[in-house]
Amino acid sequence: MKQQRLDAIERYVNEKRSVTLDKLCEEFGISKNTVRRDIDILIPRGTIKKVYGGVTAVKKDGDIPGLLPYESRHVAYMSEKDKICRLAASYVREGDTIYIDTGTTCVNMVKYISDRSCTIITNSLQVCTLAVPYPKLRVLSLPGQLKRETLSFTGNTTTEYLSIYNIQKAFMACTGCSLEHGLTNASSEEYIIKKTVIENSQMHFLLADHSKFGRFSLMTYCHLEDIDKVITDCPLPEEYQSFCIEHGIEVICD
Image (cartoon, rainbow, N blue to C red; front, top):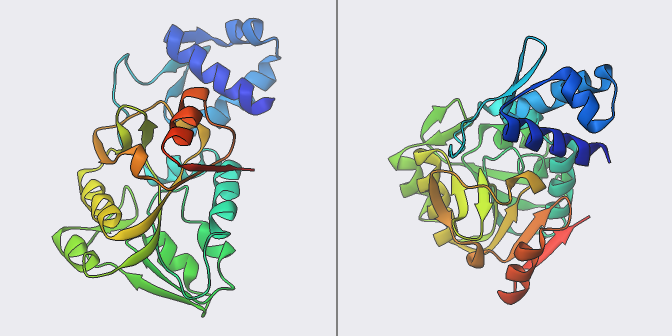
């Protein structure tokens, strides 16, 4: 119920562009203290910001979502992302060679596969760091220059190094996912790496919370029909569910 209210407030602010706290109280039938708490939760999503006496939308109509700082993305939908990671981890078997993407939806997979002897290929600094306490996890870190916005290693050497590996299962994130544009990303450096991963992996898993569907960003690194399994936090919108059934894509949610 609370999550639905948060999503509704976010949509309302983006539609109206600027809204007072009093108007939000009236529209959603909640107290000013509740409105303030909700806004504090919504701010890290990067679509609204506080102004004197209310809130305003950050993006203009028609804007394509850009790359938010890692910390802002990390704190958004934390419980949903953790649930998605737990579900994704159930598909990792002993001896697997997997890729874990840099997206904040993927990194916590590490703690759920810590008891399995498997090989992780990644360009994520966070994944490497989280795997340190778990000796069963063999980690192959891709080389490159550290990109602080994504806490990942990128560059020409990264894709060259990545292309020599045969990956069994790729666990991927995205900035947005739409039927028309597929899986999209806002960073050109990350785009090239993600595309190379898809080309060099056997099974493709999309890890995405409900806020990613119906959105798209600058570059498409994979078409939705090329995904084998979608792991998310709640049932997909009807048109996405129908698309997945039509293309034999399994949808997993808790």
